Each structure stands twice: as C-alpha cells, then as structure tokens.
Amino acid sequence: MTYSEGRAQPPDAIKDWLWVFVQQSLDYAVLLVRPDGRIAWANPGATWILAATTQEIVDGPVSRFFTAEDIAFGIPEHEINSAARQGSSDDDRWMLRADGSRYWSAGRTIALRDREGVLQCYLKIFRDQTELKMRIAALRNRALLMEADQRARNRLVAALARELQEHLGPSAPADAANTARRLAQDIAQVAQAGDEALELQLEALRLEDEIEAVVALALRRAEGAPAVEVLAPPGRPIVLEGDRRRLRQAFVELLDNAARSTAGAGRIWVNASVENGYALVRIEDTGAGMDANAQARVYALLTDPQAVADPTDPRSGLALARFLVELHGGTIQAHSPGPGKGSEFSVRLPLSQSSRLVPAPL
Image (cartoon, rainbow, N blue to C red; front, side, top):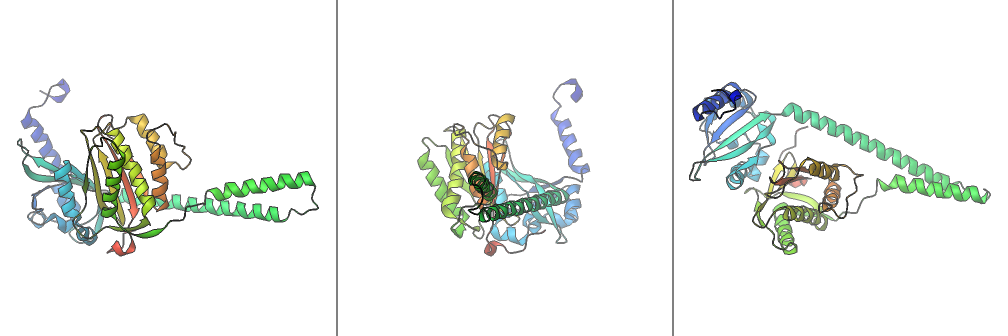
C-alpha cells in the first residue's frame, strides 16, 4: 500500500519515514530534551548545526547553546515552560554553537505527552537561518536609508516653502501674492506632516509589570472576557524605555482585539521574552482566526503608514497600536493559521541599554 493510493499508512511505516527524515536531513536539527532541561538525544542535523559530536551534546544542558544574555533572562527555562503550558513555543533567536560562534536559530519546542497527558519530554526542532536573517537585516537597513532620504527631501521642501513665504513682499500683486502664500503654506504642511511626532514621556518600564497592568485593565473593559495567562521568563527583569500611558494603550488595543475574537471559553496567552536586543511580546488566542482576506487587511494596517482604518471595523484599533509601537522604535506582526484557529500578534520593542548584557550581532 502506498500513499498515492489515498489510504492511511500503517503507523510503523510512518515511524520509518520520520526516522529516515531525522537521520538524513542535515538542514534540520532535532533534539529530545528531558523535563529537567538536559538533552536525551540528538540527530545528525543537530551535530552539524551545533558543530559538536553526539557525545558532546547528549546528557548536557540545552542551555549550553543559549547566549549569556538569554540565560540571564531565563529564556531556556521559559521556552520549555511555555511549551508545557501552551503545547509549543517559538525558538527564533541567536544561539551558540559548541565553539561559541553565533547563528540565527528558527524553530519550535514541542511538549510530547503520552496518552494520559503526562509530559515525557520536549522535541526541539530548528534550522540555521543566519543567511536569511542577514538578508532581512540588509533590506531593513536599505529601507531605513530610503526613509532618511525621504525625510531629508521633506525638510528641503519645507525650507523652500519658508523661503518663498519670506520673499513675498508687499510690492507683489495681491492675487499672485495670496496664491503663492497659500501654495507655500500647503507645501510646508505636507512636508512637515511626515516628520511630526508626539513627544514621549520616557521612563524605565519593567515589561512584566506593564503587561500585568494592561491585562487587568483589558479584563475590566471587556465583558465576558476569556481567560488570560501571562507567561514571562524567570530570570532578570526585562526593562525597556517607553511612555507608559501610550505603550499601555497599544497593548490594550491588542488585547481588546484578542478578546473580541475569542469566545468566553477560549484562552489568551501573553508571552513575554527577549530576542536580539528587543523585548518580544506575543499575544496569542484560540479565537476566530483570520482568512486570507482578513490577514491582508490586518497586514496593511500594521505595515502601511498610509493605510486608513475603517472606524466600523472591529480591528481599527490595530492602526493606533501600530502607530504607538512605532513611536517607540518597535514593530507589530500578525499571523493566523486560518479561520477558527486563533491569531498571534507579536510586538517587538527595543530593550533599554541597561538590559543588554552583550552587544547584539550586526
């Protein structure tokens, strides 16, 4: 019996195929991690990516391959704790090979349980995506340069508009002078609009404290709100510099969105972490999810500065959240596996300098 016949494969055949995959693929590292955080088994892909032998990997702590910064924040424990509570957790971050060199690891940690629901171990599967990470960083730098160039052009236009206004003397014909003045004012207003920014009242904020406050506020605002669970690393506090009122408003908008999308029996997780010099907050729900069209609308609200939110759209608050997060030098991303499968909104905000133990790689 073959797969092409449209019939389910016997369990033994499926096990054989999976075993061939983990043994032959060097692109994917697979680790089995015991509940105590020590590695029980590693496939050839793990020895390739981690630049270590099986003997050097097995029985050692998985935290050995995390950076000193992530260890200080308690990220190794947080990853497996989150997987135990949520079923799985994302593992996208800079990690270490056995020789101490860094690479960008992208993958997931999955809690494996027996039929009675008892935790047996964790499956950690990941890839080396350093090259892709570098390409994305290069594109981001290029976008920043283009944005700086556009702002310079705007300032030049504004300067020309001011100069035009200053040189319009009383001897100029009345109609021509009035028209020119109005033109100069319009030019200055349009040019300066892109550079206007709210003045932020920055202070040192402990991320976990802010999340707890925002969750309490969101639950008071939403009737019949679903259960919300906050997950945070057990290590040193995650500190960032921000405007408390405006950051709380951004997170309230995101939590309100999750609460509206999730039935009363559903769940919402607010998972705080750190990643490459940024505080990372994932707001995940088990709610209605999004189809392709809804994801496209949300993507526009979160990425296009010119996108205008429809006030009748329940997701219109996402545009405000994006604006407030971007004021702090952060970003918001959204993802949904599909209708009925929940949604995830990820917020990245720069850590304060005092929170960074080691410089982030270029």
